[in-house]
Structure formats: C-alpha cells, structure tokens
Image (cartoon, rainbow, N blue to C red; front, side):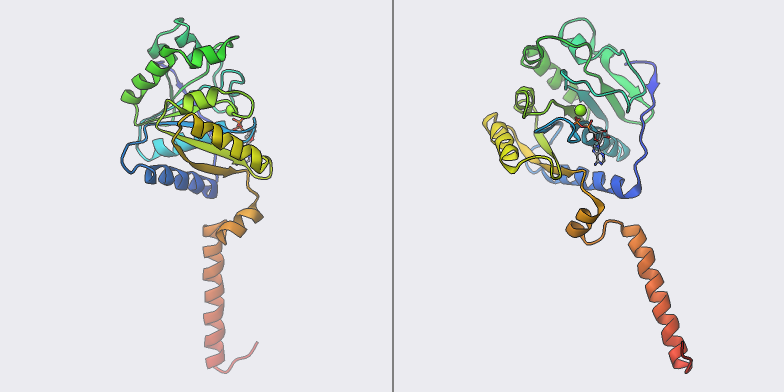
Length: 249
Ligand SMILES: Nc1ncnc2c1ncn2[C@@H]1O[C@H](COP(=O)(O)OP(=O)(O)O)[C@@H](O)[C@H]1O
Ligand SMILES: [Mg+2]
C-alpha cells in the first residue's frame, strides 16, 4: 500500500450524513443468509450520483469501524479527483494490464479504514478488461482483505460494464436521480441487471429537494425540528403558568 495518506474531501452536514447511515443500515439488513462484502453501484445515466453515493457510503461504513475499499471501475469516465486530492495514480487498468502490483494501486486516506483504488490509465477496450479473469480474481482477492469493497461502475444506460460487474458481486445498488430518469429506462436497467443475475439490494433516490424529502419523511431536519419542538413546549408551559396566575398577554 502507498505510504502517502490521501486527504478525502468530506464535509457532509449532519442530515446528509444521517442519510448515508440509513443506507449503510439498509445494506446490512439485506444480509440475511449471506454476507454482502462486494457491492456494485450503478445508475442509468451519468451524473446521477454513483461516485458520490459510493464514496459517502464507504466512508460511513469506515466510520462505523469497517475496513472499506472504494474501487473506481468507471474506466470510460474516471471520477474527477475532487474527493481524493491526488492524481496520476496507478489504478485498476494498470493492474489488469499487468503494469502494477496490487499493493501499488491501493491507496490509504486520512479516514481510518477507508482505502481506494483509482481507475488507472484510459484504455480502448474497457469491456475486455472488466470481463477478464484478472478482474474477477481481483474482486475475490480484495474481498479477503476488506469487510466491504464498493465498486463504482459506468452508467448502464450507456454501456454494459455495470451488468458484467454486478454479476460478480454480492449486491448491487441502483442510484436514481430524482426527476431525471424516465420510469421505463429505470425498469430497463433493472431488467438488464436481473438478466445478469445480479442481486439488487435496492435503489437510492438521489438529489432529492428539501421539500420533496419533507413530503417523504415528514421532517428533513430532526435536530432543528427538535429545537423548534422544545421551544414550542416551553412557550406553551410559560403561557399556562401565566394563565394560572391570572396574567394575560
Ligand atoms: N445528493 C446530491 N446532492 C447534490 N449534489 C449531488 C448529489 N449527489 C451527487 N451530486 C453532484 O452531482 C454531480 C455528479 O455526481 P457523481 O457522483 O459524480 O455522479 P456519477 O458518478 O453518477 O457520474 C457531482 O457534481 C456531485 O457532487
Ligand atoms: Mg462517477
């Protein structure tokens, strides 16, 4: 593993952090008969939030004491290095092409238990790399080293890579950006994953607005609502006391 510990840009507000904790718990709830060690994250289109979800879920798991590895397998459109303040690293493609050893592509971060592999150099034949024995053997190797391996994949609406990866992991999470994907496309993606024999763990509805979130969950900000709730009761008690004393506003 690299000697350098990369700084991860991680500045979630408590509400968002809580949402990833809920996602983490829901993944654990899916573990009925078999342990979910390897997870693929996909979506129909680019930009729906696959990388964001993969990294934040991984960090949430690491913060809960798990050893987590994030693998960027979106070889066609590598994740911009805005999360990991690093560039030019040897990654997944270098390993599959025999240009790097496993220990050379695993990077440490300043978040304890959270490591990552970048996608590596660009290649002209991404599907061949993903379908190679070397890739499947790598997944088997990595699941021995980590509690959870999260694989960030390309969008299924454009290329087949994610289905190939989904067929080789314990579970797949679909990210859906609110109001961005047609229902029939989401269903088509699901059918493709079912065909690949993927174990679909569920879907993450991403980029939801505060008002929409409120409609789903009643209150989007538990802490602030709690403050408001306490304030309301204090005012009520004060009013009752003054009423008893015969005072009026
Ligand atoms: N829940 C969210 N709320 C706001 N912005 C988000 C959210 N999820 C992702 N984004 C932003 O949307 C853009 C695309 O997200 P990204 O995770 O890179 O998508 P993908 O990996 O699916 O292409 C990024 O700029 C990211 O910061
Ligand atoms: Mg991405």
